[in-house]
Length: 438
Ligand SMILES: Cc1ncc(COP(=O)(O)O)c(C=O)c1O
Image (spheres, helix red, strand yellow):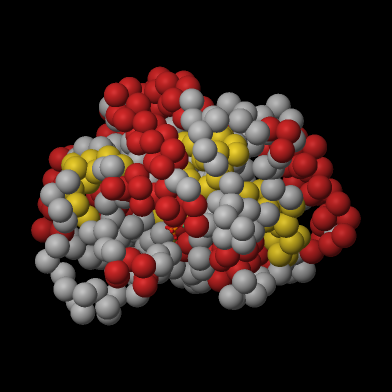
């Protein structure tokens, strides 16, 4: 460890207990394949693929080469009123890999920006269609949609909202974490009826005031909640019936994690708007994408005024950054050429068996999984739901395994290139760490 305690002070770290970290820093110095190297020179298995970002593994040469030659050739290009070829190529690739009917791509720099962009697209869409009163959003309790202003409002994780208040006009349908479904493998059979709660909110607010419903097809941050069978179909039906846009936040589920290119593809429900980030560049360079259908894009074009006018007054200095586009094209090529989606499908049953073998270990109260994603709920210390997962995460790290803890859960999401031994190693480390908890 080369950083002194003083040198650790200035950086106010995100989603981190800064005081604890600065007393006991966990510094990563390198990454290759499915492993990190830490400041002590140890190899640490990447049990969450970064932050659900690096499914293809770290240090992929194809991405390294694409990024370095892009920086050398065109390090930046103004994104407003001028273009560069890679963003168009990438948009076509994204359209190819997402469900039919989603044909236009707006680039951002992160998941959070992607959500706020999607919410603005939805409101602007209705305004352009002469229904400017359709401004409200319906999210879901336990939903996580990033940390920007709109995303916090439609999100349903209390921890992210208590300090900031209700940032946008939003209401929430119930979450789908049900007692009846404890230890369910994959999609629960029970719970589709919860989609009908949307009908109740529509009665309460009236469809004429609701712009969009936003959900993650599978909630990741809440601790991996696969959708009950039929639930997403029902949401789709209700939205269509009441002329409300349906947004799928696929920042985690997009590009492979579910054993399909998208959650929409896997669960066979197509939204009106899809948000993507994380895996799109294999985590190497920040990039997000909002994908919409022609009816939305064309509405903006038809209402844009003279053709030199901006149809959608929105965009970031770094939207479609050439280096991010180069990284994304290389990352998506790897995903396709290495058949990583099939690899996830093959490994998913092995991962499922391994993770469910933790049932009965101390403090485990529920286990859920889908594709290469799993969440484990832990019993609380009195009044301290987040403490035990934190302690477990630290114990795993001591053993050379990085996992994510959040709320009263831990989350596991190994890289798509994981093998059976590595899965067993990860699950053994979690099991032993559980046994050591008090
Ligand atoms: C479903 C979902 N939406 C949005 C976000 C926010 O993405 P970012 O952290 O890149 O802003 C996340 C991040 O974990 C996410 O899981």
